[in-house]
Length: 110
Image (cartoon, rainbow, N blue to C red; front, top):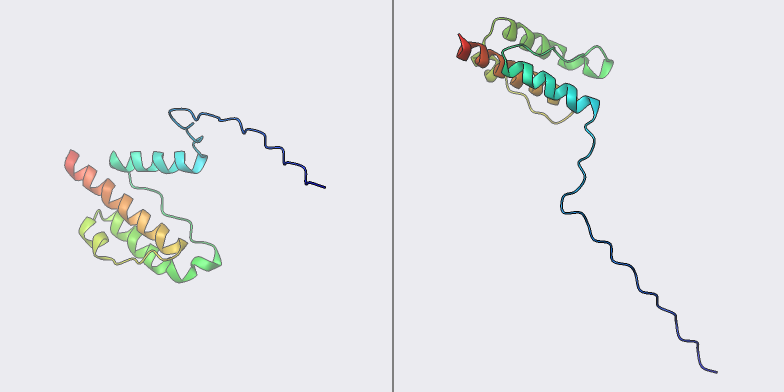
């Protein structure tokens, strides 16, 4: 008794579109883009919300950044080292960078 031959059906070839469909923009990405656009126009970004317990150890550094941003001290903001290894320092670094961008935009406009 011979084993029956396996039936192999051809797989239809689906051609991909020339350009992949753009992923819909999430509300967070739009918000972040709006904040960055405002910073480029000289508006300071809102500080991140560090009221949750995991952020407690970073609140002093955030307060220092907010104070320097309020004084429009771009050099002082750049001097603060931030190692973005978790969400809290990443938020601090983003705030600092946007604040520097806003301050420089103001100085460039003046």
